[in-house]
Image 1 (cartoon, rainbow, N blue to C red):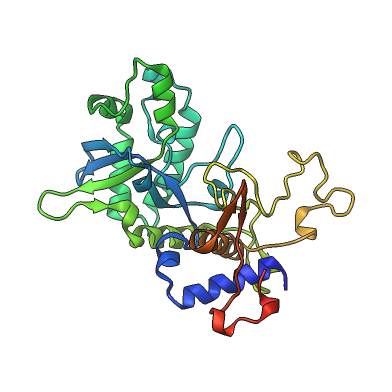
Image 2: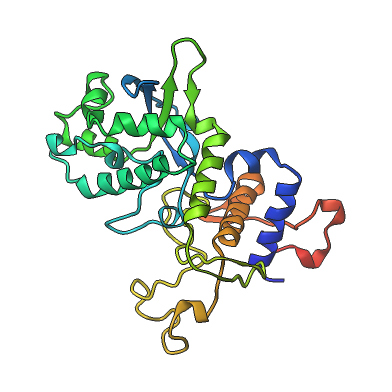
Length: 297
């Protein structure tokens, strides 16, 4: 059995078993990020408050992601759909001598498409309403979250992720990064917009095919990938000379790719062992009492 097939079956088993950690952090179209900047918006789409979480153990959150944003790299990476780095969210970057217009426009365009769909909830509309005012950096500066007079500090802050919440007057505040309904709405919208389908070599089922697979399997700063067909970065040594397109070599559906990579992330978090600079993990696709020796990797 291949490692990819085993990871796929492991995810299926853990999902059916309703594993708490898997359900909270490793669903389809979901990734993790360290998000120390906390932004609070009123129900009317106005700035309410902001804070900074210095404790690194409390910075990690789960965020929605697209196929392209999960595997993003290079000088023009794709935006995540809601929670992303400050450089993407800030519409007033020019006032602070930041060259982020392209990143911000890409982020807002994607958020606008989600907002305008049938899956655009009130909270997504509220976030968009605030961000289109283009006052984020100014508001954060007023709250002491960043110091525009220090270019190095400003650059550092702009490369940190922002978590967003809705502050309400007569009800409990909404910590959007903890709400599963946000993730569910996003997945429904994403599926409605997915393109070309084909036979997945892992699941054996028809589905939307993936061309850009996730990175950062166990280190959120790592760019290496398990599956890649990038001819440019690999000097034409991926499939050229054998196939005309990467799809002739292998086809993996978006859903299968997500399950494979999230299963490995979940396993590493659950039982991985760091030895030197190598992360090792051993597992089977069933509980230990049921596992056969040939099913482990």
